[in-house]
Image (tube, rainbow, N blue to C red; front, side):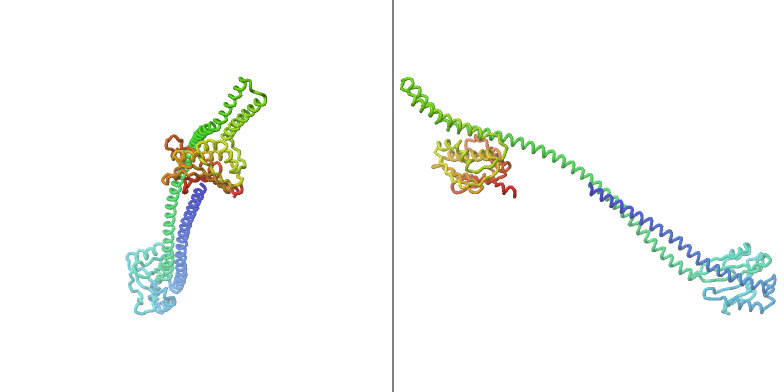
Length: 491
């Protein structure tokens, strides 16, 4: 969940940055346009202000040098014309290339005439009273109407030129017009530079918009992906919860199943134990019966003295104690003791053989003991006893089923290992890996539960933290129990 929040925060930050960049770029672009227009206007206004000052001075000079009728004064005085034209020539530069003064012949016509021409080139110079045809009659006539200066650009030529018209006013009448044609090349250069910057800014704006759109699209897709991931995460979470619940239910079912299997195994072992106890009780019960008959017979013949009665009673008491000890062993063997305690293989094997050795010996099976382990381990001792009993009973069954000559069971211990083996021929290779499976049985009569080895492995490996395995040797099967010592458990 924290990962989704972090990604969403990152997306939000990117969106904010994208909006700021876009708005900033637009702001700079609009500010540049305003500044560009202001520069152009300032540049043009500076030129016009300069020209206005020049034309005002020229107008004052002409007004001072002539009478109220400028045309008549210049017509009658050639020297004055030359002098004024020389003054106009002083103002001719590369920028201010044409300076001339014209007037209108009459108001009813659109005809103008030259009064003065400041051109330095005699070939281009116009003579006094020469007809002049303005490029823009409308603007020239407008000066006569408004009595104020104005300017207009020449749109029909390659280079940018501007014509400035300044009226010469005497007695509130426009007597003539001072015209200056000047170049705006420097203005044009400024405009071009500004236009290039404007194009650059437009590219930057377009790029910013493109980046903004990309970020917005990716943010949208990322939000969609995060939402999908979140939905999938929720689905996975619900699936995991459902799966975990099912696993818990199955584990609980397996536990119940194991409990049932354990109970069935214990019941099967109890039946086998009862059979073993019956074998051990048969001789003492027979001895008790024969002693009781002898006691009764001598009593009827009045041949029973106190010494004989005491002797026979002690025999009966000894037999009864043996029977009682057998019952105690049986009760202790199946006691539900869930407390771990210290123990060694020797005492466990002695306890198990105390119950079943007579039964095994009565079937002419030899038990060979090689008990070399003195290691003390900490575990559930009664459960280990049940496993040893089950392994010995299985070995007994195999030897009897296969009619083995000189049947023998070996019990060997060393270090933390207990090996129980027999000469019954071993476990077939094709089934040796499945002998610990539940309900697997190799008994020929098929009357076995198949629970003994499965529960034995469960007890050793899950309850007692040991291992139980099987392999074959030259004589038969070898079942190996390996326990951990307390020091090993700590490791």
